[in-house]
Length: 210
Image (tube, rainbow, N blue to C red; front, side, top):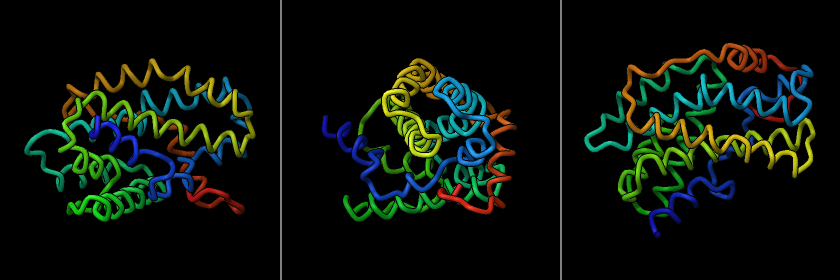
């Protein structure tokens, strides 16, 4: 139980990783009018989870949790997968913040890097199943974006929670798939999300960093 509670603490919005400041390009598409309802948000997030950073990060995290993992090589691969400058800063800034906070709380020496790789380093000693760690990570990632949409669309709290609940099955399936995947299984086809993130870099008035 202690390992699970520790992981939940690290993935909590209260843990100082600054996740609330990032929208993963969502701010741009909301501003464009592409997302204005719970149904549209669910479709957008489903695409990111299935074909974009969700699945990529899930596999990277699963690999980072394995005994003897080369975290330096995984970090380099994660950086190379970032489709834009903002995406790179998003994963690296949160990863660095997580490394600092976990190191301060636990006394362990966790190296900074992209978020899923840092979490893999930190969580490897918790004794939790890979599927559970990856599933909770994906849930936290999705929950953060739902929270951003609730504030910015805006959506009602209940509508936002309904979107998150509707994605639970997909999160479970992706976590199970990632647990047995290898580096060669990583791919990306979330082109609309990538383009939105690139356009967000030149957005005149922004609430979120990405």
